[in-house]
Image (tube, rainbow, N blue to C red):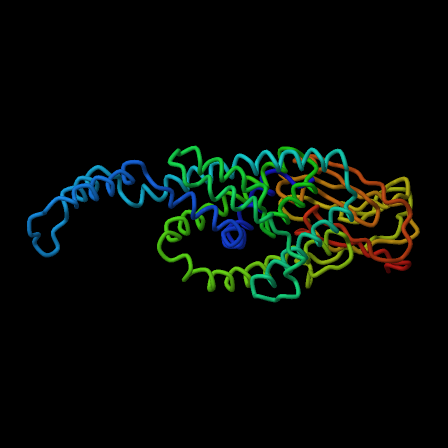
Length: 384
């Protein structure tokens, strides 16, 4: 399974690149309601002002403010703080609910224990959802019915609740956004399932909400003034970014499933397997060697990357793959061979052995669980 730190970074980056704008497009009404709720002190000012307006007033100088308005202005907090406080409560509630959901999805994934190719298929489905959502933002009517949407009655109910003055209200509204997911959120939920861990699942969902926070804070401030002016351009810009993230997610899924490889080459030259030496001694200590028993040993060094990423080995020879952890970290630790259903968590510093059996000529691909780090072993009948 991918490390929690890796998934946290994945969630944050996805939230920054696509999640904030896409979720704002879906949850914008709830966010605007939380930000524009009325403050009790402000609500009482018009009443006092209207009662005093019934009395004859003295002639005012041009541009002069009424005493009630000056008093309200002096007593009220700064406008920025007034707008951002509800947004902070909204995001805190959203962070809590999505973190809990991520942990539950991780538990579900651990119980389900999906194979590497099942996890890869979920990544591809996540990318497909992003594509549908992006096309919907572009106004393509044909996909409108395919995009998941919350019931209209739920949205009206939550928006009515934002009219109260309690600071707990925007927090509860933010907590409820877990029931109003956008397309990118659904994609991150699928990633949380593939993590197979409550901690990793919570990390990816919490990271996603944290990534959306900056844009939500800015939009929360602007929604009160110019949300309509922003909505059209925001939708188009969001669609472009979501399409880019979708392409990356689908590509990662294809690599994680071993169905494709988009690596243009390896920074390390492929190693050639030597012929078995006479006398039973190992021929070399290189990445591919034959040990004293005649077994072929392939050593893959795992840091934050795989070194090397391409091997040439002999077919028809019993083969063991040694995963040599060397301060390993990130996604590279979650090693998979999709074709064989192999899933291993590489030791940070140490060796993990994987029996590959006796391979026929062909290519065997390996990758990290997220499809971000990949490589392959080419087995040949004659490596001379």
